Length: 286
Image 1 (tube, rainbow, N blue to C red):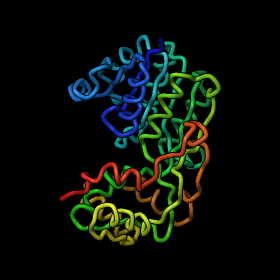
Image 2: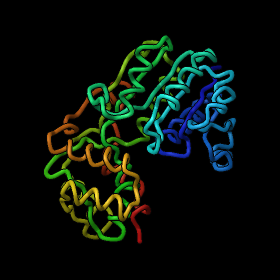
Image 3: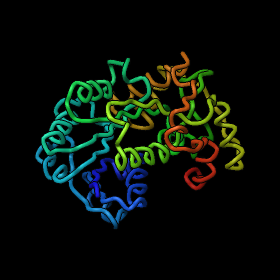
């Protein structure tokens, strides 16, 4: 049986991948800096300490592992001594397949950290699969949650731009599936989206209908959004720049197209934004 290493398991994608892999009966090792939380959440998994900013933790995390699912922590911008160094250690440890969760369009956006990780995988010898999901439905319960709970608004600089919101549960399920059965997925990149393209006004309508109170969409300017992220959400400059840039890209239609690949790979339709909101109503309760 393959042993799988899942990083980021305390987050959305990694957590979904770990739960799905465990449900499949896989031998799972979850790794991260919060080992106490990992032990509590994943009683059926082995736990290892992995700090992507501390190369001394890489070898033990990768020891005896057949497949790896890697997610870039938002706070890591310099990927050379962190994520790319970890990939090199995985190759030395004999990992047979590596799945990296990137972002849609990373292959052409040279200014974002994901691009450098993709290039490192592509130029290396380690068998890999790259997942390129678009905008996450989980943003409404994470990045946008405070504004929805406290102000009943979704506040982003997207203008009338649309996004085909994807549920990270589907991304995690696909990652676990590929790691368990990597045949046919080597050196392939998949563009992943949800089932429909929605504007933020339409998303606010879904929230209104499902939560039973009015949630409005308020268009932000680029500068206003930067100030908002820095002052209210206390994000660092790199995260602020990346998040603002991604939302501005929606104005150009960067994320409005719907990809059929997720449905083809999972053998079922992806979850919708309404599915996500309905399943997690408690996240927006006051």
